[in-house]
Length: 467
Image (cartoon, rainbow, N blue to C red; front, side):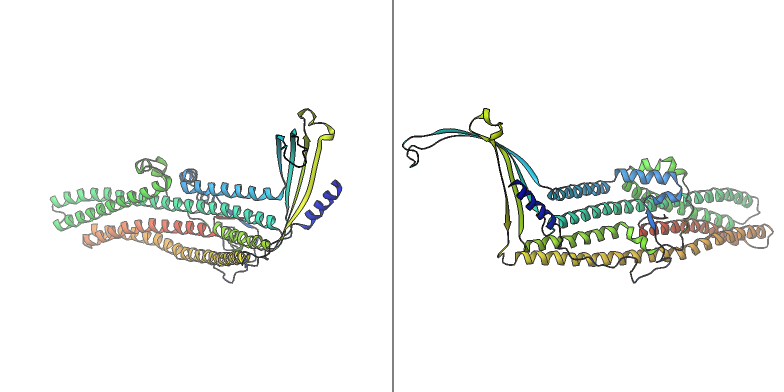
């Protein structure tokens, strides 16, 4: 009897495992109809560098990003979601294996004297038992397998979502940091300009008192100095706002952030170099694309789970144990007992419940198909926008450098002409005013260019590396 049961169980195991989930057929990123500037669709083996901010070689920036990634509550929630998905997967995996439970019991029974088999006498007896009970549902139609695959995909989606949170947080930190450093550089330029104009103002007063300059020259110089002080006040206000934004991301007090010596001494780094042959396949590693795809995989497997309700289920059970009327005899060789069996349950009428569940699963999969396609389209759009913006910003930054150099040279020439008496002081004032604007514009375009690099890193899902 044992050998027959084992053969039957092995046959059921071999039969089990087929899946009713439909074949998943969606366009890959690489086969998308949309191609963008800078993409090379033939190149492969590119991966994502998740610590992309280190490309800027700024230790202060690295420290801030690491601090945020360790302390941010959104990251903590994302990690807990991963743990939840991992526990769910472990629960689904347990269905692959039989369950084994132990059961022990004792009963003492007295029969009735009025029972027709008792002969007018009662009987008193004990029953001691100790058993191991084995239960196993054969995965005939792949319900367990599909549930397990759906749970695996859900776990991968949770991990990708956590990466998306990290990417978004790191991008915000880097962008806010560059904005703050840019403003501090602009403040330094303005303060140097104010110091220079104050010295010039003193010299102008002396020249006016000696009759070498007119009063209008002194008034014009004063207005230029006041204008620079107004610019300084505006920049200081922007620094306060930028510091507050960065402090919130870091969970730091603004005063503590402003006192950070590393930030105080920081300067805008050089811009990154963007390769011209970025493969479109790299977007498959973008966290939101990966998360959306794994959600699609999970929902597709759940269609198979829903379909299994149309078909019968097969369960195997077995009991192996000991039973005796006397506790001292429970462990003797002839006290053994066992039974084995199989049960088959098949659906008959459920008034459309199974069909409705299958329809719900299919519709959810269709929704996830559209979400995945939308995510891919958005990924291409963001990369296209980032690359297009960079092309203009690189030109703007070069023009800003050239413009600053030209204005600086212009100021030298008009000062020479003014001292020679060939032009009035208004030309000098215009050149000085233009030079401050040119210096501030140069820093602003530099920061905008760096910000476009951050946008590109974020759009690609991180940095690019080639194996």
